[in-house]
Length: 284
Image (cartoon, rainbow, N blue to C red; front, side, top):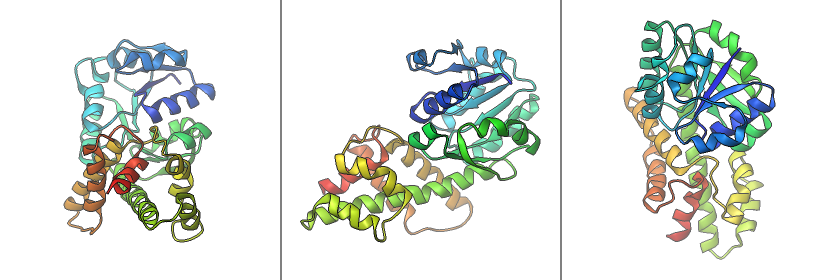
């Protein structure tokens, strides 16, 4: 199976490295070519060029606009040899877009798997991500051995759109956990308590969570180098608001949580790890 990879951001590049380490020869493309140079693999000249070289293509870019550009845009994948190929889109997309992408690629004789992942850089390095996959089950089964190289949990969830909707629901919780932990830690400091003490008490109490485990060091050292950015969680929560609206559902917390990250963006923190929302509360 020949494999391509588009999108070498923090998580994308980590997954690409993991696949290479697991013996998968990749052909890659990234808008900023320099990010691909240290991988030691072939670099395509464009997405269209890449689609001529491989049968399976992972896409992991910032948002649905970027996904649409690399798949359908000028020099996009469909401008190459796309018939019979499978695109595995791991971008956290808008659920309306993935349905569009699936239908348009189907017209061209290609396959599209809606396949966002749960987790960030550290679990990706260990092969411990979770992936949600929607689309033709036959194509899911065909590519499952690839998913097993970087994921510990693999869920097939039915028709295209389902995986993205579940990812957005997950990220409502992700963003909310991080925001409430950040605000509680900053409040404890304002009350005169040592930050490490607060974090340890939360970790042995109501704050005990995967999020606190993986972000404890960042919060203590205030090293907000990016694993998953403020900009990304803000985008995901914006997509989630559309889902709430379309389902005629409601949530009391989503808008407020999203706008905490909105304030972080306004403070110039958009490219930092989303745990940098702590700085919003520490400052106020």
